Image 1 (spheres, helix red, strand yellow):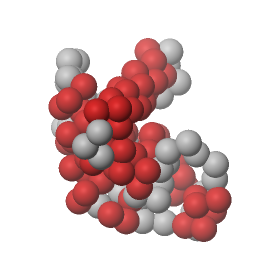
Image 2: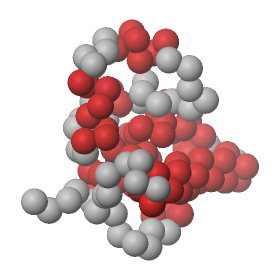
Image 3: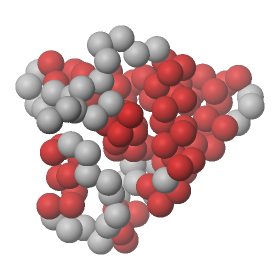
Length: 119
């Protein structure tokens, strides 16, 4: 499994050393591939679906941080929906090998890649 490790929560799948085939068999509504296809589609309804999905994932991650279920991250306090969408699309275009993973995971990794925590 070739998943870039940018935060402890993101590295969790690697701890179990799940083979790529196990990840592919996991049910998910969106993969990086399906999300990128939506985001690159010129039809307004697809662009809206892309942005809405990504913003929902970000809200879910922030909710888990707020509830203490996930470690904090170093993302800016205020991120625009278009800004986040552009970061995720750029990440998915750059790292084609990440597209088979759950889209929610790639959203988190893309943001952690863009806004790494300073050590």
